[in-house]
Amino acid sequence: MKNNEVLFCREAVVNRFSETTAYNILHPSNAIKGQDAAFLSSLFVDINLTEITQQKTIFFLSSLETLYNLPLQTHIHTVTFLNATELSEVHLDELSEFRLQGYQLGIINPRPDTLPDVLLDIFSYALLTLDNLTIDDVIVRIKHPLIASKKLWVNKIENMEQFTQLKEKIPNGQFSGSFISKVTPVKGKRILAYKAILIDLLVALNDRESSPRVLAGYIERDPTLTYRIIKLTHKALYHSQFNVSNAQRAIEIIGVRDLIKWVGLVMLSSVLGKPDCLFSMAVSRACFCQSLSAVLFPNLEGAFLVGLFSYLPSFFDEELPILLKDLPLDENIKVALLEYKGNLGGILKIVEAYESGRWENIPFDQLASKDISKQSLKDLYVKSLKDAREMGTL
Image (cartoon, rainbow, N blue to C red):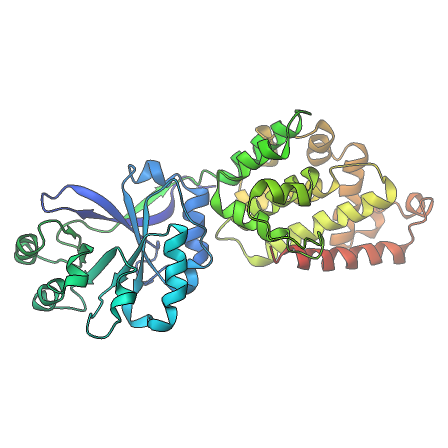
């Protein structure tokens, strides 16, 4: 991944002494208002936000719909601000549930005369923006008891006069805007948290004494991954009839070996800036390798990972030897990926030849000795496409 990639933009939020107390996190494209779930999710997965934001509180503007797709962050103090114009009493139960789960919520430009008191009570923060309100509007609204009781943030401050007036009226408030601090892009290299978790899982799996509880500890380091692994247990593939509430129970249902497969899938699906078809192609190849391996070598493990990881260079823009260097993979998997050696290497070679239509490179005579005809190979390929579509819904 390139080191000069713009990860996100941030805007300093200060107190009346101009000390930074929080950061407003923005999409790299400043034109985008609000944040989409994929962008926000990647912030918590691929970026060391705690280090970049110096352990300050993180503000971001979002929507109720997006909030549903973001697991609770327990290691970073975040506040999600929702637009008052999109909220009404019908959202009361949903918002109350988010608060009970531990989410910190803020409301943008609330009008106390149009919102029920019980709805306003849910929010701990209020954001007032000077691109939508005048200074006089702000002063009037903060006098209302239900607004005054909240932690107040005023954004879009453009000059010293506004800042001075607001500091006098809201001595405990937080402030931001072009006068206080410009929006700055934050560049760097994504840390690929899923890769780090995958490495730890592979090491743990090489330790025969590792239990689902130990493996769950690695999974639970990332809330998004935990959420997606638990969600996986509801797939028809595992026929779970129970309400799974933690990673350990999910691992017991999925199985330890399948866990690596799914973490690898989640890792690739989290990479931004790549076409959706690339992920589909990687999963299809992985499924094809696994299906062919099951027929040729029923007791052989690792075919799915060989197919999946053969696409790593396309996702991370690095050479395969560099990407595999830190992964404690079985040696059979590594030589298959790097040199096409061993049974796994032979499977990968056949699959890649089939995908590209290089029929002369497919040993049909040898396959026939294993009762695999041209038609049955085609059937395995079609099945892999179907399996990949189902896996892509994780």
